[in-house]
Length: 328
Ligand SMILES: [Zn+2]
Image 1 (cartoon, protein in one colour):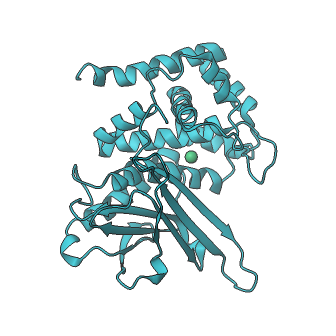
Image 2 (cartoon, rainbow, N blue to C red):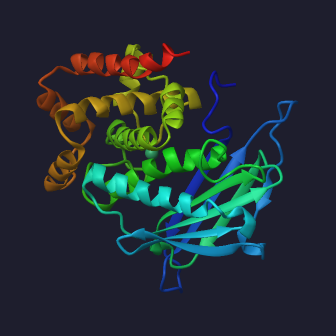
């Protein structure tokens, strides 16, 4: 059992697989998401199968995301419950604009969001959809809510809050990092380049800053969940962070700590160099940096040793949570 609650409240595994179909001209993309939960007896609950293709109650709505992009919503929300749907779409658009401004890069492609409501949200579920022309979408997402929850504001579904203020800015960050040369990354089971502290740190920073602007309560949840006031105290975690590989199979608590440590390290870097300049400079070198080169570059930029950078990042972590703790 973990010592902390996993954001939002369920363990969610999310997979997006893209591959070229043999006979189809357009790539088929498979999107699946699984929520896992245990019953009172400690056994995993049997998941409810959510199959959008077999449902005839999903309406499709489209909203402008600017720059020619569209948000397509597939939802079983009744027309009476759609009064704040434009506010939801506006938040998605602001997220795109925020991430573009923060990175200096342009998000290409539309977003597809399945928004499904239930009398009670199933605690365990599986969701899977195959999409033709999968390359149309920069993002494919699923959010669940119950019949009493709203789409925005303090009564919004936790699924939606987490999607809007954490998952979406984080994943748009990955989308942009991957779309242009940035750094060497662990893909296709190659040996690790140990750049995860940088890529995940950039994406977590984007999520935190967007949440800070849009929903301070959720920004606080991110800080608390990532334990930013303590996470870099230990030398062990510092070592794990610089050797963090895609193939690692850490338990969730350590993995969550690594996201927190990565965010603090990247925030330290961004004190000295704005993110758009940093990404442009990495692109200019062809995206050939591995983790060691990145760290050397950070040390040069900050004019500090690795140990000093970790000390500053740890201090930043306690400063970030300190004003909030004093209000408790
Ligand atoms: Zn990530």
